[in-house]
Image (cartoon, rainbow, N blue to C red):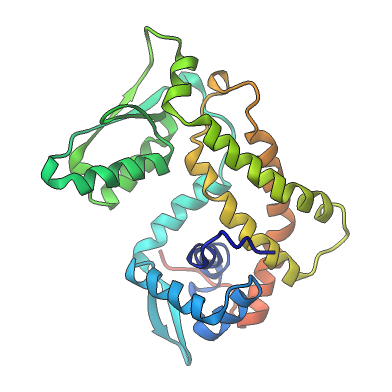
Length: 279
């Protein structure tokens, strides 16, 4: 079950992140093509996606009796951060914990960095208050600091730990700083797609490992964008019809029944065994 709108490179990222990191971080090109064929991605598309991931520094070529690719050591912290956001606590932030504020100013001669900052802050879950001023729940401070430093953007940004004290109604203001309708639309799309799958799979006694893989990889690929777009704002500030809870329940149900059999399927196809991955 693969969504044709999902890019092959995103599916490959998920295979590495969810399975191959636990199996040494490497796979032969031949085995990857076999796995991706189960997700309706053909060989030429796999090779093209691998080339793009190599250019982005995510994968490195390595021969282990066969030609293949391993995760670049430089991206291990990125995947670790992703694990924390995707599989960590899904509870809303506590309003009393305050906020992290990012303030930046980029010279016109380096405006590409301005675009990169806006894109990355949005991806981290920050809302835009006004030009050059962004806000997120305080618990995102460490991820923001690490990400901006890793990307070489820290010299343009000031990060502040802050509290909101006056003057507008915070709930009203927050609704203009984050695009709630866009976030809810993605949650709704996820629930519409995978709610019926969860209802079926969580009531059957067992699931074939190959079927688990074919469901799990596209599901996780679609889901892993959402914990970044949704920063987990305090529930007091959310719309009354906020639909994240239902979507998260679907994700947790499917992760519980699909993750391990999907990993077993990757092991069966590749012959790789679990091992410790050097960070």
